[in-house]
Image (tube, rainbow, N blue to C red; front, side):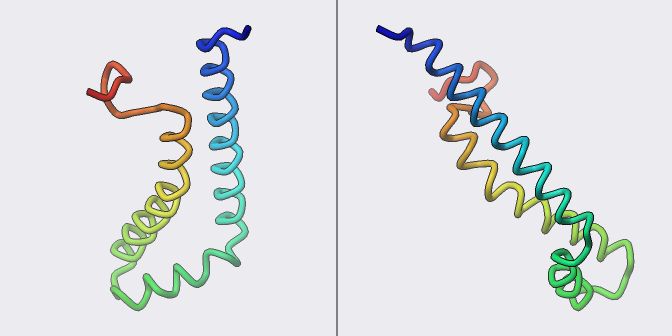
Length: 87
C-alpha cells in the first residue's frame, strides 16, 4: 500500500517541473521574437507611447502565463492561502 503523502508530493513535484518547463519554453518562444510579433502589433495599436506598449505587453504575457499556470497549480494542490489550505 502506498503512502498518500508520498504520492501527493510526487504529483506536486511533477506538476512543478512541468510548469517550470512550460515557463522555460514560453520564455524561449518569446525570445525568438517571431511568435511575439502578433501580440506586440496588437499592443502597438492600443497606445503610441513606448513605455505604455511595454507595460501592456508585459501584462498581456503575464495573463498568458497565468492561463497555463493556474490549472497546473490547482491540480498540484497549491493555493494562495498562507497555510496552503482552503478554508
